[in-house]
Amino acid sequence: MLLDIAIEHDEFSYKELSDQLDGLLARLPIKTRAIFIMSREDDLSYKQIAKKMNLSIKSVEYHISKVLNKLRKAL
Image (cartoon, rainbow, N blue to C red):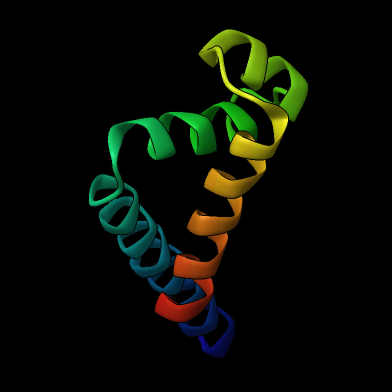
């Protein structure tokens, strides 16, 4: 019984966290969101993203850093 409650709580916490992340990503500028998704979901390197988006690697680093800072503040 206690284990079931703990599991339900963890699932709820995960859903809540996932919803917060989705909301934050939805409010990002399109380019920043695309770069973050390519990095985290598509598992592309900064170099690959830079080439694909026609940006410098420093620009990609900037966009990723911007998202991570927003995530830290929000969570």
